[in-house]
Amino acid sequence: MSNIVALMEAQSVFERKDQMDRQTLFDAAVSLGEWGIFSNRSITKITGLRPRDVAVLTPKSERTGGRFEPEVLPDLISLARTGERGEMDVFTAKRVLDHCSSYYASRLSGIARSNLVRWAEKAALMEAV
Image 1 (cartoon, rainbow, N blue to C red):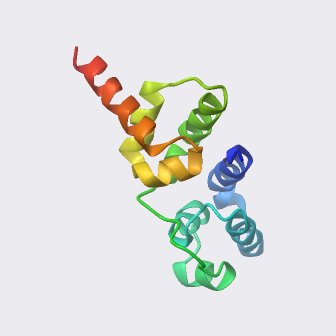
Image 2 (tube, rainbow, N blue to C red; image 1 turned 45 degrees about the vertical axis):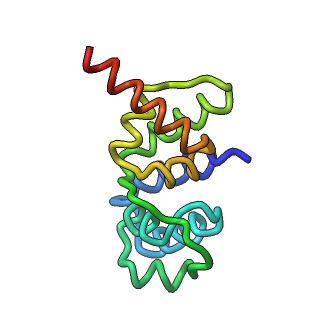
């Protein structure tokens, strides 16, 4: 199943969080938690809420996290779309892995971790030439 809609929602919240009131941010955190792909720490970074608030709003049920910076959401969306088409984008994969752990990027994009790592390595070699 594709996570593109969840990633797009996360990007929208991240981009507009400074204009949202507290209740709207709480609602956004609950909604992001319902997708089941974002860790509480990621939801905290996306919404700007305190970790304690997010923990109350979105109970943790499994290990879903990894290194993640919300600024990478547009690249994650692009990568997920590329993966759905059965294509590869080595440079986007490299940018994503510069800001997100390979395990978490795989979970969010729906692309196998081994592919992401291989693509990022290929991009690094191409850039070095």
